[in-house]
Image 1: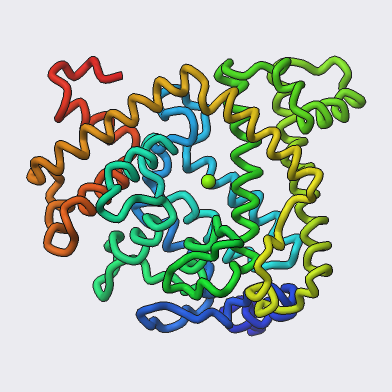
Image 2 (image 1 turned 90 degrees about the vertical axis):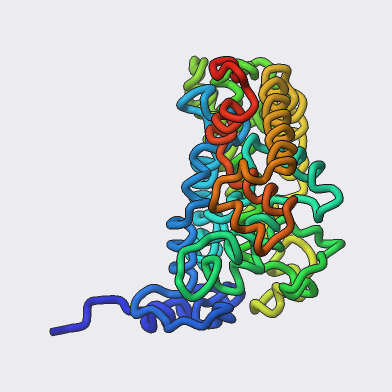
Length: 389
Ligand code: MG
């Protein structure tokens, strides 16, 4: 019988033929902290991706805020649907650049798992509460989750992911002027697959936040027409559909904004790779500039859009009300657990054997979904359970 299954070794061979010379090849991974036998048909980054999807932290993304808190409506992005959009955009970019799609997808799926409940206000609250105890930052928390807190295997704590994924978590939002201080070769720049996910994240949230902003009524199309990137794409669409308006116009423009930016990233990245003479992974790691990037002109428009979203949406009166509630819930729960650790769930309480109290409480709260945090607050802090929203 002819061999029709694609085993790992054959797949890895295909990678060397199909992927670009500067793509990370699965067979060249530095491997895992705890050595494991290679899988018969799944290459290493595909296994990483699957481990992330099967983790508890990944499933919790469904009930964590992106901008709008989960109970505000069924059609708003959550961290989970945001993550799926990042993965989709990231894979498109990775594939077209002939990079390792499995690695890019794994990086996309993991990129927000360290976020606490209530979006950025939740992160700020936890960081302030942990000021004298090591602070809180969501990328470091993602690394903590996959190295220590997830319990899935009898032999070790964490998910035992590949070196490249763990390294990528710390290097995703790298400041190219200050590479960082960590054990994952800070002297080397991030892999292109990691850079792709950073850009895909930016493209995804700026465009879907426009869409959610319109849906909520907090943003109006007339206001968006002041933003260059919106106005340009709308003008293009009007040539084909002069009478389009309302939500359908909104969808079309958002779609066009994503497409325009992805095309721009592909062209600019190609130019960057040529300009810096990038011919290998080694070259990528030696080059401390973002190689996967928007062109300067589109980057400027992208920044204008970000500023618009900041003032028009993220700091909108109604969003601010939810942010304040989230901040208060996190702060009150944190102080309550510090004062009385027996209020922690038993699985978190036993961590006190291994970690200091503040870190245990921080991990516990960071792991909560918005929904869980609301319920905990109602259970522990509210005398009349119905008044917590
Ligand atoms: Mg994100």
